[in-house]
Length: 608
Image (cartoon, rainbow, N blue to C red; front, side, top):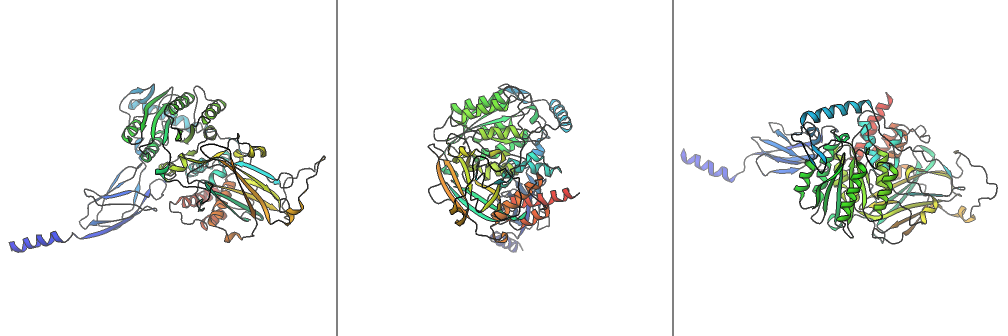
């Protein structure tokens, strides 16, 4: 018997224990969105996998069970007992939901900024602020007057600056997720369209971007045409990007003492810190009642020091935004990298209320530093007293990006997935000017870009600032066109008394609807370069257009519905939904699926 037991033990050592496979999907508990890249491990072992692009995972475990551990940056770690089930779906909680419950344990100051407070002080301030903000909504948005139709005969040129910002989309998503209709002026249609990446070909010639055009009928008006213009920036591998000299300028004032503000800010900058390379450097400046530096310029390889500095921050005090900006620019200049990416990343709810706070003063400061090669990007957080207008202005004048972070997934999109495009410029001052053929086009209107319009004379003026294009970025613009011969009406302009507009006879024989001109500058400087691209109307039916075309049209039409546009006609939320569902494409990261869900839920809410 003893011999038989020993033989059984020897044989067991040659054959692995029986296994079974556990599968499941990992999602965000608040949004239901899938979480890709979650680390799934069998507790106490080296066995592990990561979830795929749709949050799915598959792991082999022993028959006797055990525990699975789910870890994801920005989320609370979860442990789940395996039990007898072969499928385990897990909903993870964003870490900020737990951070808001952590009471500060110490009291102290760093460079004049409160970074700790007593438990009772913190709870009292948070309770008072929350009660006050529920009673008062002081969010600010610049007014937008929707672009109208212009006569191609009287006004044949349309000129504007590109816009790669996407803050408006995540901001309106925040409203809709809270069961609210977004303010009309919060809806910037071009930012909604440009929130999404498009399947444009990579540039292969001398220019750092590819130009794509497409035309079909406008889904909301069959008598009109819709022109789709796309730019695809060249992707530069992270290892080939120039070194960065970054200054994190973080708002730690009392208005940031809410779960979706400072805790989310800290979680977001932890994600960014993980992307830094050894050649990159980071300093951290904070501001509340005064401005102070909490971390000297530190190599990106010393991530622990950067993360520790972030963790020590706590909100309290008023908002000396002007002083914070000045100190951040001083630090950026002291550590300036020639040929590198010198940039301040401002994270705030935009509530500048002490010191130099007027938009004009801020603009002058930011513009002067832009000419010295130090750019400014802005990340917005929170609600209730959110100052969108001020942050958009600062980012525009600072040659930087502007994003609104409403959850940790958005932070991952902006600071991880789109890291290169967010921080590294491949083309500066990119402008478009379109000349319409009045023999083919009766009238036109640019959809969105109301805050980016330029004078026609600005196109050839290299001193005129315009938008910048980042590594791998896509930019999309849409024009709605009334063809010659259409019965569609638009506001007429009286005939001129002293001159007549004459159409070139050759225009009637041309197949070209319009000529698109692009100007851009190399990031290293020098005069602008010109690209010219003519567009013909090939009369392609809407159903045969690309997913890119139909998707951008769906997003634009949803934006027009939110803005209650006079041009949307009878097009309804169900029409938007049908158009978007037919153009979703591969959608590996499910950003488009999120839009479809948002349209569906808001459409139901609007019908009530």
